[in-house]
Image: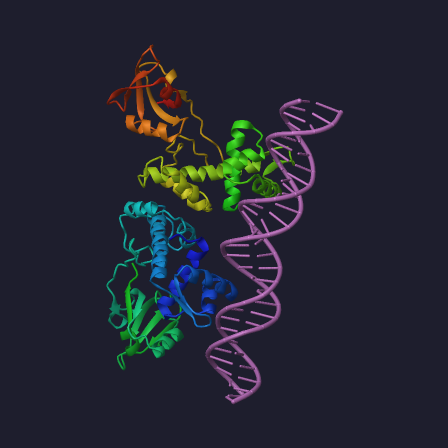
Length: 220
Length: 220
DNA sequence: AATAAAATTTAGACAAAACTAAAATTAAAA
DNA sequence: TTTTAATTTTAGTTTTGTCTAAATTTTATT
């Protein structure tokens, strides 16, 4: 199955949001895509038509298996190109996103297979994100609870073991999500709470109980 | 100035035709672009609007200086990507055109500059066609048909004027490609066929018709 | 020179992907 | 439980690039 550039971008956007929240809603996707809710609704109809989406009017939506595979294909292309731009063309890693955003829409299975081999079949892109293989399998990484991380080490949030609404609400308040970069600054021995820096910006204090449920991996 | 994919394709099409005939006409461009004359007229208006074209209704048209520069930019991107696909990703040289056709529309000056450096600033693509530099300057090279080369002189294949599948199949069989080194050993007066040495290895005999279509230059 | 043929352009329509404004539905507050 | 607010969808429009069919202009032929 082949998709238009716009379809691929929406698929990627939905995939991104549903990884954090499960069900996705129209306004959130409109914000993610920097477009209007009405445009999102238009595209949702097309994606449902192509059987990539679980979607009922007014109810929220998410990608089905075919949709997820399509998303992983785009993610794979994006991350391989980012790797190429940084490792081969010597771009700074924070400059490559917009160019990879264009390259990812070139559809040639052979091109991507050969690029993958040329790059040495990398497992992670320059941002530390895993590169799915051609079957959509994502390499697993060594992850540790935030409560076990040494001070000053930069890590990335990879998952949250307690996904209750209460926990997600709390993390939302701290502006912590999958992919957020954290650094542990200090541990308060009184109650085991941690002072952490979020996204290289604001520092805050989280309880030991929260820290135990947040899993992170090396930033590489 | 930035152009849409469709505009770039038309610019390239006009450039190609005007190199052979000077003035271009609507039907010829429609055939070149595999589209309808009415669509060509629509695009001509846009390109004239953008001041890339000398065009008067019913009179024929051609690119002005700005248009030629735009065309050379696209040609440069196309040929650099073809070089990349063959030299780095090890594609067969007769398979890369459709992929380069997509890559050429990614517009990032820095990307192309870095790609050029990464590839070692090549002057000719894998088909032997010259790669314009970033100012649109095309490297010139004295080339002669293989049928005019004196005996025992070492030469390098620089281009093939007949690029049909049949010709490429034949050259593949003889192991002749762009960059291959050849020496003419003997001419058979009976039918004009030539005995040549390929890559300082095997000798073989090619017909006069093949020899006339293979262009070579001095071995630098 | 008049007419037929070919080439070219215009007029109007369509599909994709976006938008605005208004209507419909769901969720929250009084 | 109404009423209000927020969210989502529909209806209708716009832009880009394409198309068909008809009209116009140029070229070729009697």
